[in-house]
Image 1 (cartoon, rainbow, N blue to C red):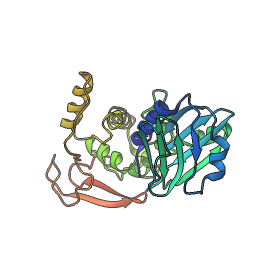
Image 2 (image 1 turned 180 degrees about the vertical axis):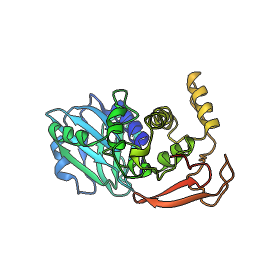
Image 3 (image 1 turned 120 degrees about the vertical axis):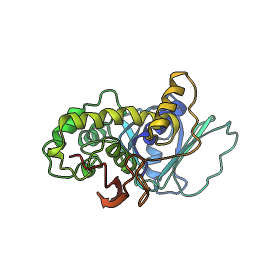
Image 4 (image 1 turned 90 degrees about the horizontal axis):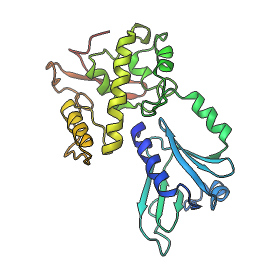
Amino acid sequence: MPEGHTLFALARDLHAAFAGTRPTVTSPQGRFAEGAAQVSGRTLLGATSRGKHLFLEFEGDLWVHVHLGLIGTFTVDEGEWTAEAPVVGQVRMRLATREHVADLRGPNLCAVVTGGEVEAVLDRLGPDPLRPDADPERAWRRIGRSSRPVAELLMDQSVLAGVGNVYRSEVLWRHRLSPFTEGRAVRPASWRLVWDDLVRLMPLGVATGRIVTVEDQVLEVEAALGRGERPRLTERTSSVYRRTGRPCERCGSRVRTQVVAGRNLFWCGGCQRRR
C-alpha cells in the first residue's frame, strides 16, 4: 500500500496541474460516472492529502475523496491534448484539461463528499509527520496508554497518519526499539526520537519518490537538496525491510519477520531488544 509520502507527492502534482482549472471529469470504467458528472467542469480549488487519504476540492463544497488501497494508482501526465488521450486499463476517474490528464485506477475508495464529511475523516486520523501543523502529542496520548505493541500502533492510522510497513520496520530498527514493546512501556523520549525521525525521513520520500532510510543515503539526499540539486539514487536499500534471514548490518544477528497488523514486520533479533 502506498505510504504517506506517495500521497503527499501526488497531491502536490495534482494541485500543480489542476488547481484553478475546470477539468473535464469522466469515468471511462463507468463505476464513478455519477460522481464524475457532479464535479466535471467545476473549478478545482486544490488537492491535499492527510496520511493515506487524498482530497480534491471543487467549488460548491464538493470534494473527491480517494484512498488508493493496496493496488490503486493515480498518474499525472503532461502534454498538449488535441484529441482525447487513450484510456489504458480500468480508469475509475479521469481529470483532463488541454495541458494535463490524470488517471485513477484500482482505488479502494473514490467518492464525492462534502466538506463536513472531509472533516469527519480528518478527525479520525492521527497526526501526519509530513504536515507542519501536526501535533506529535496527539499520537503520544494514544500510544502512552495502550497495551498494544508499538509496531501495531505505528500502522494504526487513527494514531499516526501516513506511516506504513516500510517506515515502521525501518524506524524501529534505526532506534533499536523492540517492535513488541507495549505502547505504555515506550518512554516519551523514545517516542519523540521516532517522531522526529519520521519528520526527517518522509520528506525525503516526497523529494525522491522512494523510501530513503539507510543513513548514508539519507545524508546523500539531504546534501543534494541542500545544494538545490535533484537527488539521484541508483537503488533502493533498506536495513531490515525484506531482509529476512540476512545478517543485521549493525550487529550481525539474523533479521526476522512476523505478521503484525496484517503486514510482514521485519526486525533484528539481536539489537532491537530495547523496550
